[in-house]
Amino acid sequence: MTIEKDRYYIMKRFFAVFSVLLVLLLGGCTPQDVKSALGASNDSSMTSSMALDDKAPLAIHMLNIGQGDAILIRSGKDFSLIDAGDVSESSRHMLMTELDKYGVKELKNIIISHPHADHYGGVIRIAKRIKIDKIYDNGLTNNNRSFHSYQRVIDQKKIPHAVLSEGDVVNLGNGVKFDVLASSDSLKIKPEDLNNSSIVGRLTYKKFSMLFTGDAEREEEAYLTKKYNTKLASTVLKVGHHGSKTSSTNDFLAAVRPTYALISAGVCNQYNLPKPEAMQRVQNAIQKFHKNLNGENTIYRTDEDGTISLYTDGDSLTIKTEKKHRNTLNLERKHYEECKDKNDAVIHFNAIAKKAA
Ligand SMILES: [Zn+2]
Image (tube, rainbow, N blue to C red; front, side, top):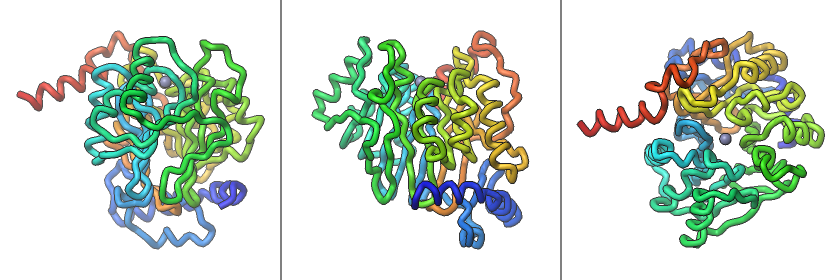
C-alpha cells in the first residue's frame, strides 16, 4: 500500500475502539490484551472476534531485557532482531531466555541501530548459540572493549555484515520490509553524538507500520521531520532513546501520529527513564490525533508491562503484555537509589536462585 493510503487508514482509527469493545464483550481476552483493527474502510476484521496470537503472520516482541533495546520480529517463520540488549550479565541472560521462549534457532537479520553497549551488547552471546545469517549496523565504531568483541565475533564466526545507509531496504521476509530513513550518513554528527547516528527505519506489512528510532534525539528527529514529514506516519512508534526528554519532540510526533507507543527501559533504571515530560508529549500527540481513543493509555513500557507483543495480520492488531497493562503516565517514579532491590538484575537473579533451589 502507498504511504498516503496508510495515512488515510491511520486517520480512520475510530474502528479501534469498536474493535476493543467487541473483543471485551465476547470475553475473548485477558485485561492486558488489546485488539484493534487497523482501520480498513470496509472493516472485515471487525467480524473476526478472535484476538490474534503467536500464529499471526507478523509478531513483534519488545523484549524485557532490562535497560536497553531488543526487539524480536517474526515474519512467517523468519526471525529478525533490532538491537540486542546490553552487555551486563543480567541483560544477556534475559535476552537469551526470551529468545529461547520464542523458539529462535536462527536469525535472518540483526540490525544494530548504533554502537552503544545497550544496543549491541547481546550479539556475542547470541552468536555462540544461534545461527546469524546477516548483521547490519550503521558502520560507526565505539573504541571500547565490548565493541571490539562485537566486531571480533562477526569476523570469527564469518557472519555476513553490511552497513545500512538511508534509502536501503531490508527484507524481513514474507512481505515485511524495513525502509531505512536515516543512518550515520544522514546527519553530520560529532563523533561523541552516536545517538543521532541511529539507524531509523519504518517497518511495513500491508496496513501495519512501525517506526524504529534507536536512540535518535531531537537533532535526528528534526532531520526526519524535515525530510519525510507525514511519510513518517506509523501505527506504532518505538519511542526514541528509552523515553529520554531529549527525544519525542512535538513536531516529530505530529508527523508520526502514532496510535501506540512502545518504550524499552529497565525496572528502576539508574537514568530514571522514561521521563514524565517525554511520556506526556507522546500521550498528548496520541490524544490529539486519535480522539477516538478517548484518552485511553496506549503507551507501553517494558519496565512496567514486561515483554510487549504485537500480533498483526496487516489488517488488525492485538497487543499483549507479560504483566497487566496499567496507566503509568502519572506514575511517581522512585529514584534508582530508593528501589535498587527492584532493579532488573536483582529481580532476575532472585528468580534464577528460586528456580535452582
Ligand atoms: Zn540506548
